[in-house]
Image (cartoon, rainbow, N blue to C red; front, side, top):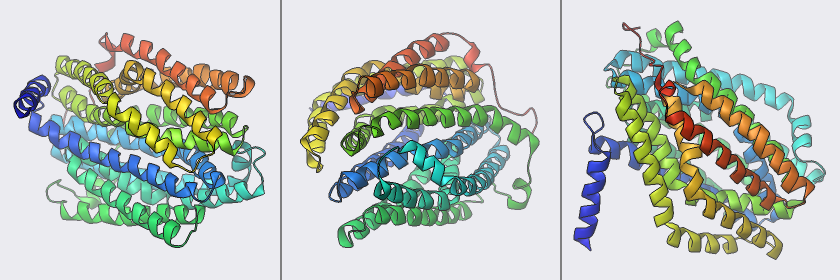
Length: 465
């Protein structure tokens, strides 16, 4: 058995190694990302499980407001991804000072953007929540407002540590990014356990834990950055001064991605509104589906996040052929892992669904939805979600944005209205619409990957900036 495992490991090492990306470097990139995503998925599962003791109403509030929160965090994460790509390409080209400047400018821009956006959201919170949660009652609306206020106030702290973690992935130091996100996740998990299990605070406890962990995460990221400032050649007073080339390069990647993710998650929020119209049973089932799906999707998320750094480094040193080769190899690996792990993930999913305090109706809705996702995932996830990450790393952000938005609003929202709303399928109809969206995107992105236009942009300055 050990010899077979060793042989498989050797074949995988040969399959993923190259003259640009060594296997040890790839492991340094992959493993921290995996553990980071694992803890994020576990945190979502555990917090929702604790909330299930507080009732379907609390589960519904947190799930729906998490979807709403993603609409606005996507603007921040789009900017972070732009910074990651720019840092990775400069690292690949051997320009350490330019990579450091890009890191500092990404962090400062993300914090400023989220502070302004958070203030605007606090001002319009009433009409926004009223639209997204129609007819749910004053108690649910009050809980949703409480959670949303905590989200807005902690938004700049979230931006700081996320921008730092994104820059570290671009440098190839995923371990440092993992340390920050692990610290945030463990802190939030501990606070949730204390505030929900110890004091029974429900949504208030979830909100306090989220805001406190974000603040502490920002402080922890700042401490790490200060300790490693010599290694990353950080010059605060120089690099905080806006640089036109850096900002232009970030915007080339970040603006299309940020707008894409904003309108994409806006579409998701509108689609989830059709589920909210069916009441807390469907909303609670939807929350469980999202939490359990994150466990099944771990291989795809891990390899997708690593692909941004890998492709960015390959293009940074001018190896376009190798960049495309890595995309295809990662896609095959994602598909194989999802299929190979099914005998484990399906029984785990069943146990997780029935561990929540759901009504029989909610449990059955969640089970049907997950069955549809697990059947379609190996066929569609790699092409619809991982290829766009590679295309962005190659500078093809505009095509990705247009395609993703067209599919979201033309396919997913339309099918959600049809299946979840008009035909009354609720959460099951929402997931049928999502799978339809994956299928269309899969075809479009595979066709784009086969050409050369997607790696036509190399974000490296001719001279140091």
